[in-house]
Image (cartoon, rainbow, N blue to C red):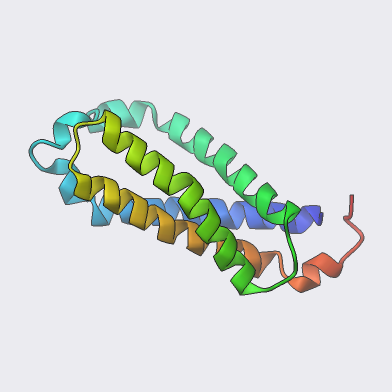
Length: 146
Protein backbone atom coordinates (compact mmCIF):
# COMPACT_ATOMS: atom_id res chain seq x y z
CA UNK A 1 0.00 0.00 0.00
CA UNK A 2 1.26 3.44 -0.91
CA UNK A 3 0.69 5.34 2.33
CA UNK A 4 1.15 8.79 0.82
CA UNK A 5 -1.45 8.14 -1.88
CA UNK A 6 -3.73 6.53 0.71
CA UNK A 7 -3.80 9.68 2.83
CA UNK A 8 -4.17 11.95 -0.20
CA UNK A 9 -7.09 9.82 -1.39
CA UNK A 10 -8.54 9.82 2.14
CA UNK A 11 -8.46 13.62 2.26
CA UNK A 12 -9.89 14.08 -1.21
CA UNK A 13 -12.66 11.55 -0.63
CA UNK A 14 -13.58 13.22 2.67
CA UNK A 15 -13.81 16.63 0.98
CA UNK A 16 -15.91 15.25 -1.89
CA UNK A 17 -18.15 13.38 0.60
CA UNK A 18 -18.81 16.59 2.53
CA UNK A 19 -19.48 18.64 -0.61
CA UNK A 20 -21.79 16.06 -2.17
CA UNK A 21 -23.48 15.49 1.20
CA UNK A 22 -24.23 19.20 1.42
CA UNK A 23 -25.52 19.27 -2.16
CA UNK A 24 -27.75 16.25 -1.56
CA UNK A 25 -29.10 17.06 1.89
CA UNK A 26 -28.77 20.85 2.01
CA UNK A 27 -29.67 21.80 -1.54
CA UNK A 28 -31.53 19.00 -3.33
CA UNK A 29 -33.47 17.58 -0.36
CA UNK A 30 -33.53 20.71 1.82
CA UNK A 31 -37.09 21.67 0.93
CA UNK A 32 -38.23 18.08 1.40
CA UNK A 33 -36.82 18.04 4.93
CA UNK A 34 -38.76 21.24 5.71
CA UNK A 35 -42.10 19.91 4.42
CA UNK A 36 -44.97 19.07 6.74
CA UNK A 37 -44.93 15.51 7.98
CA UNK A 38 -41.20 15.16 7.43
CA UNK A 39 -39.67 18.01 9.41
CA UNK A 40 -41.16 16.56 12.60
CA UNK A 41 -39.07 13.41 12.16
CA UNK A 42 -35.78 15.28 12.50
CA UNK A 43 -34.09 17.25 15.26
CA UNK A 44 -34.09 21.04 15.06
CA UNK A 45 -31.14 22.71 13.35
CA UNK A 46 -29.88 23.88 16.74
CA UNK A 47 -29.89 20.31 18.07
CA UNK A 48 -28.18 19.00 14.93
CA UNK A 49 -25.57 21.77 15.02
CA UNK A 50 -24.61 20.88 18.59
CA UNK A 51 -24.03 17.27 17.50
CA UNK A 52 -22.34 18.00 14.18
CA UNK A 53 -18.99 16.84 15.53
CA UNK A 54 -20.45 13.34 15.69
CA UNK A 55 -21.37 13.52 11.99
CA UNK A 56 -17.88 14.71 11.07
CA UNK A 57 -16.21 12.05 13.19
CA UNK A 58 -18.32 9.24 11.73
CA UNK A 59 -17.72 10.59 8.22
CA UNK A 60 -13.97 10.49 8.88
CA UNK A 61 -14.21 6.90 10.09
CA UNK A 62 -16.40 5.93 7.12
CA UNK A 63 -14.01 7.55 4.63
CA UNK A 64 -11.03 5.82 6.25
CA UNK A 65 -12.59 2.41 5.67
CA UNK A 66 -13.93 3.32 2.22
CA UNK A 67 -10.39 4.29 1.22
CA UNK A 68 -8.82 1.29 2.95
CA UNK A 69 -11.18 -1.19 1.26
CA UNK A 70 -10.48 0.41 -2.13
CA UNK A 71 -6.71 0.34 -1.64
CA UNK A 72 -6.62 -3.23 -0.28
CA UNK A 73 -8.56 -4.50 -3.28
CA UNK A 74 -6.77 -2.28 -5.80
CA UNK A 75 -6.29 -4.01 -9.15
CA UNK A 76 -4.81 -1.18 -11.26
CA UNK A 77 -7.78 -1.10 -13.68
CA UNK A 78 -8.30 2.65 -13.92
CA UNK A 79 -11.42 4.72 -13.48
CA UNK A 80 -13.75 1.79 -14.16
CA UNK A 81 -12.34 0.11 -11.06
CA UNK A 82 -13.48 3.15 -9.09
CA UNK A 83 -16.90 3.04 -10.73
CA UNK A 84 -17.25 -0.66 -9.90
CA UNK A 85 -16.12 -0.12 -6.31
CA UNK A 86 -18.55 2.80 -5.97
CA UNK A 87 -21.38 0.62 -7.31
CA UNK A 88 -20.63 -2.07 -4.75
CA UNK A 89 -20.32 0.37 -1.87
CA UNK A 90 -23.41 2.27 -2.97
CA UNK A 91 -25.51 -0.86 -2.81
CA UNK A 92 -23.81 -2.05 0.38
CA UNK A 93 -24.28 1.21 2.27
CA UNK A 94 -26.99 3.33 0.66
CA UNK A 95 -29.47 0.55 0.02
CA UNK A 96 -29.28 -0.78 3.57
CA UNK A 97 -29.35 2.57 5.37
CA UNK A 98 -32.08 4.10 3.20
CA UNK A 99 -34.50 1.22 3.35
CA UNK A 100 -33.90 0.36 7.00
CA UNK A 101 -34.64 3.99 7.84
CA UNK A 102 -37.82 3.70 5.77
CA UNK A 103 -38.87 0.81 7.99
CA UNK A 104 -38.26 2.61 11.31
CA UNK A 105 -38.93 6.29 10.50
CA UNK A 106 -42.29 7.71 9.44
CA UNK A 107 -41.02 8.99 6.08
CA UNK A 108 -42.51 8.61 2.60
CA UNK A 109 -41.09 5.96 0.31
CA UNK A 110 -39.99 8.68 -2.12
CA UNK A 111 -37.55 10.07 0.46
CA UNK A 112 -36.06 6.64 1.17
CA UNK A 113 -35.65 6.05 -2.55
CA UNK A 114 -33.98 9.45 -3.00
CA UNK A 115 -31.60 8.70 -0.14
CA UNK A 116 -30.68 5.45 -1.85
CA UNK A 117 -30.37 6.93 -5.35
CA UNK A 118 -28.34 9.98 -4.34
CA UNK A 119 -26.17 7.94 -1.98
CA UNK A 120 -25.59 5.40 -4.74
CA UNK A 121 -24.42 8.11 -7.15
CA UNK A 122 -22.34 9.69 -4.39
CA UNK A 123 -20.56 6.36 -3.79
CA UNK A 124 -19.75 6.04 -7.48
CA UNK A 125 -18.29 9.55 -7.48
CA UNK A 126 -16.19 8.71 -4.41
CA UNK A 127 -14.99 5.50 -6.06
CA UNK A 128 -13.89 7.47 -9.11
CA UNK A 129 -12.02 9.92 -6.86
CA UNK A 130 -10.25 6.98 -5.21
CA UNK A 131 -9.30 5.50 -8.58
CA UNK A 132 -8.03 8.82 -9.95
CA UNK A 133 -5.81 9.44 -6.94
CA UNK A 134 -4.65 5.88 -6.36
CA UNK A 135 -3.51 5.67 -9.96
CA UNK A 136 -1.27 3.10 -11.68
CA UNK A 137 1.73 5.35 -11.11
CA UNK A 138 0.98 5.25 -7.41
CA UNK A 139 0.84 1.48 -7.38
CA UNK A 140 4.26 1.28 -9.04
CA UNK A 141 5.96 3.31 -6.31
CA UNK A 142 7.60 1.03 -3.83
CA UNK A 143 9.17 3.47 -1.42
CA UNK A 144 6.04 3.49 0.77
CA UNK A 145 5.21 -0.20 0.39
CA UNK A 146 4.33 -2.12 3.51
